[in-house]
Length: 171
Image 1 (tube, one colour):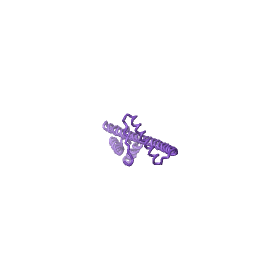
Image 2 (cartoon, helix red, strand yellow):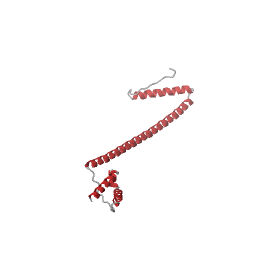
Image 3 (cartoon, rainbow, N blue to C red):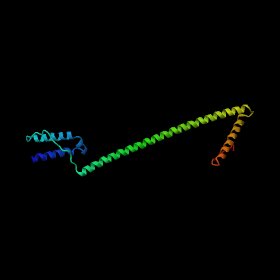
Image 4 (spheres, helix red, strand yellow):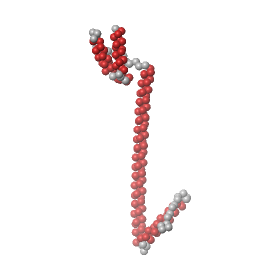
């Protein structure tokens, strides 16, 4: 009887050694079946028939429990780090998309503003030319002088905090 118990224990250890600690808990039916079949095969030669094998819960050492818990903890930390990284990536992507959309809207507004100014200048130039004998070139020079004077006025109203760079054509 002691030999059979020793053989059962040896066989259970041999099957358990081929499994992970997690598998010992999750695949208990398969573990029990494998041990029973192996024992039945070995004991048939001695006239014994193994009908069932009862295996208690695995009893790991404190060291094994600690190591297993450390592995689980490490896996959870890894998953948390991956989730944090993915969240940061999403935040940065959304922020970049929002910045791109804002720049597109700003550029569109600037383009529309310039178009309106150009249309206004063309109308003003045409109206100005209709009432005078100035050439196109003289009228354009007159309008450029008005723009320069308005820029100087605007620079003066900002308390000298604006730098105005002008250039004379042909100079």
